[in-house]
Length: 611
Ligand code: AGP
Image (cartoon, rainbow, N blue to C red):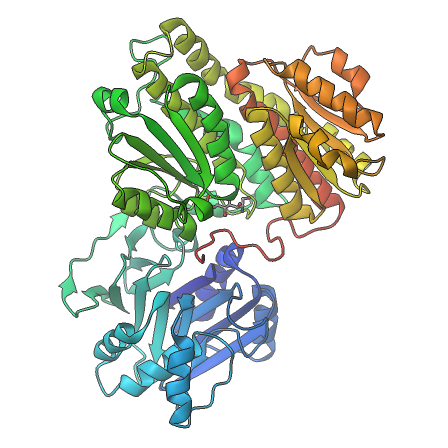
């Protein structure tokens, strides 16, 4: 959570930092702030709300400089106030600092400084760090930072300015992500590579327990013990156009519409169609055929939308992998007494690769001896490094807080993985493998056919925009898709939505049904179709309007529903790729009709790096 941006170079630092913060606003938008080194003085401007508010404030009271740092906050310690906005500064104005993460011993340190007479301006866990570094600083900034880090508990990414130094600034990482960028005479830092793409593609992903000194000459990297480290700059293959909205009103809509091409990209080179190798996961895939035959358990662990993709994969694994399958939210898995060993394949799914609970779950599974794999869009993320082996989503940067295109990438990567395992386990014959892989290759076109019907989903949202809430039902993988549909709706429209396994409805949720609470039934023509149809009728008998997401050619469903959306026919196992898309668009249009801030839903942040 929280977005960080820093710049030193010949350009106007205000412009670069504000541009970066706008790009990082998906990480938090409770408040925003900037600090500019102007000679031996540091100017600070901060405010409650978005970067737009900060911009307006700077127009009235401008700051300027060639070295600047900025922050957009997702509040943890201390309310949403100007005082709690970053940057924070020590009492003498010597050290100015921005922070992403949590300082666990801030209270203890605060008391120590209070006894010496310190007075704090904020309620944050960050301000004390500026006091601490300042108290340790004589003339060696690196030493002061190192000594301060040794006294801190928790997780932190800091960017630090010293008032008497205007040609360098410092970054520290222990936990939350921080990436550095360099160009001729310029040095950048940010929480996420997307903010740097307009300026440079020469990127250094900081690792934990590192301190960087950034100057016009470039980056010097040190360990927390002061040992100089080699700078590992690499060229990233994302470009700035991937992070712009283009002609779309919202990133979310752009990203929904990109899903056909994301699916093609995720499958490219991994699905051989009619070739010898049906599915080839490439050299980066760490498991041999022999490993696969020995696996006895498969754990699929993730949070939020990624956990819904894991749940879809779990149903597929039930069918093909011939293993004990466990799908669990990372925030639960990490505290459970989970049995793992060398015959356990533990898969951690995360678009960002930075989710704190998923990281902690992966650490635990590794410590218990499981063979681990990260399925992520961020190959340089903390999760990728923790786990060591990565199946990449190839979805490109996702900016909308509500995940959409990475969900499709996750479904594709996980489906390939489970089918690959199924084949090694002897549960997927050649004929079925070909049927599924050939159909996978056809899915992007079918998905694009659904995208072409956005207007009918907008009209459907219009008809239901005054509903009191929504109940999503489905069975098997369609239950997971119902959960994803409900999550999308809640996240961006703030309308109450809950999802249940269709067969569970009569065990309680049915009590809430009435004419103001539509039931969204995910009911493709698969093995469980008739069972779900019975549940639809039970809901209908309680006067709930029925919205059905059904398969093309299913004329019966019209009789039992008030609103239908038809997906193209596909293999039973692959329906989630298609049923989720109308639900994403329905949520998008409903939120849009209700006038919500779609790309920046309240209280949420794109990557949840706190526990
Ligand atoms: C998705 O729309 C949400 N923003 C959220 O549930 C997200 O999927 C979750 O926080 C997990 O994030 P990750 O995939 O980056 O680990």
